[in-house]
Length: 339
Image 1 (cartoon, rainbow, N blue to C red):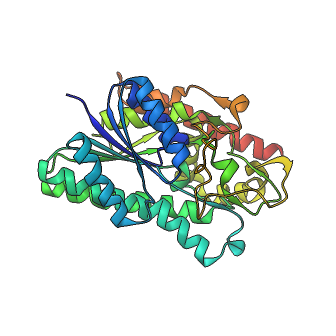
Image 2: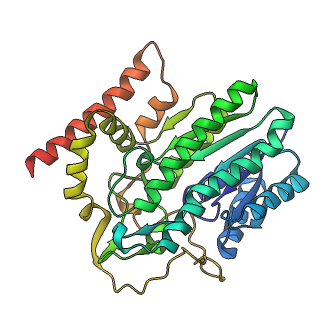
């Protein structure tokens, strides 16, 4: 039976790469995003892989639009099997330089967009007692960094409400599942269109991974939603473990390094377009695809993701994941001591 998948933020980055994977599986894929050009490109990708695509222009900050998109997806393809929340926006700036309106907008997209998507999915799934919701999270949902207060706050909130919903589903004895995939820095187009007040061009904090690495983690989680959380990338492991054991030290470390690590050496004039209020992939010829500008610095594979997906293999899986994380943490702190 052909699976039906809904992906928010499907026009670029992780959402786009995930749509491509589902297309190759021959799935029916409903694509939610704002930009017409990005949606058209994503639709072509899905269909080129052998799947069926339905582009639904949607601002996930509008709960009525999200609910209507769920109706449209089921009218076209039948019951939704998997709903994947990816859509987000952000502002790169010190907290004191973000306006209340900007902070609200990031929260509405990157947090409430997940809430509305989950509401729409569960409204369809719970009466049938089947289906899976995947939240695409971030290591920054458990360890915040400077210059991204709105985004980090939203990602922390996603963790909190998802845990509550999971408990409720368990209480009800529901067969609907909800899981989170925590991501590392990923080479997506967001660094070309995020609203930034930094003096230099924003960049993901190395190590950087390609969107396909993240997408494989998302699809695996959707296929195996029994676990509450998955990690992708060595840096995700080191970040989450570091926050658990060395949070005060990380505050100081990130206070010293977090500004430079999020910027390249390229000076910017402050006139670059941003997608906070309007999509930048709306007009023909503006489709950005899945990848950003950092292909030459990005990893195409993540051994740690394999360990996350295989936590117990004669005891070696969990030990391997912990070893990867702790060795990376030791390297990070060693670099700090050498400064």
